[in-house]
Length: 299
Image (cartoon, rainbow, N blue to C red; front, side):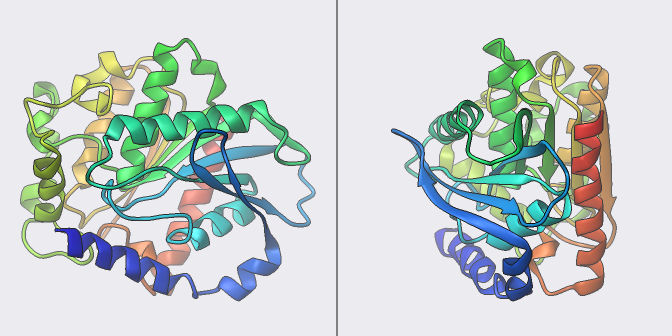
């Protein structure tokens, strides 16, 4: 499994060359910084934006809680910064098989608090902060929202954006949502990039399979009761992803919790498809993602 996820990281790094010369002209990376006693971060701001009070988006990369860094999704951050437009803080949280998920969430928490408490971007509004994550990073930002709510800080985050996120092991699905979670069966077998077996390996290796699901890390497994107080949430999922119905269950539980939620499920494509050179599909993806992020800010 280790080599599999490292191959995914290498592929993402290779794909960063796509359109990067153009993106460098319209998005200015302020540079890399380090949160005191915390993780390294990379800051992005759109150049030439006429919009006052830009929102701030804190991003957690994918990589199976093992791989990934500031470079693997540099293009993704540039695209969002340019198209929303928004200031983006990408977080290089600790990730490896010997790092607990709770420690990864701690890194994101410290980066979020540091961003909120400092004037990192001229003209940005730290009252408009969105948490955004993909795949394994989506797990972490969802857990961070839960933790902020428990700490009485729900008002500090105005939106959550989830891309192909891992929200719960299928066997941890609450009874009332089990009929919604069929994607590990529908999309069983080999798949591009990440298969169902790859994902099961992640849970097995960390010894967090049910009944060892920690609800503070996977609040969707606790159903609506654990999602009360969540901010407007935008979900984008890939229909041919083994983990597609993590998003289906998350969406249903959020609605039952009274949260505002919007979801796009992209037909015919697999996990993290926007990392591949698929121009037409990627055009659809970027349009939906940026509109969804704007929706969280306007809700």
